[in-house]
Length: 85
Image (cartoon, rainbow, N blue to C red; front, side, top):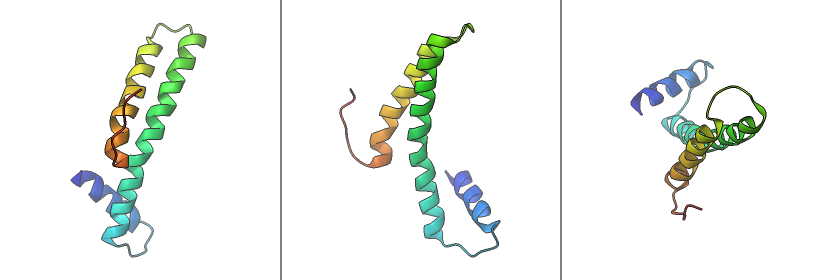
């Protein structure tokens, strides 16, 4: 996590503007929450690709893993417990 913080600090500093520790923390939180959309996107991509692609790859297993990560990560990032469907 410290490396992410250093990267985010450097990223914000590259604009030439001053930034606060709170801004760095907020960007880190937002990036972590975006991983939910990323997991769901690639999970859905895997489901669709499993039906339309002829490449020998287990798209449905890939989709299962990504959607599972969505459900495992969601309560941690959004701060509440939820029963997994």
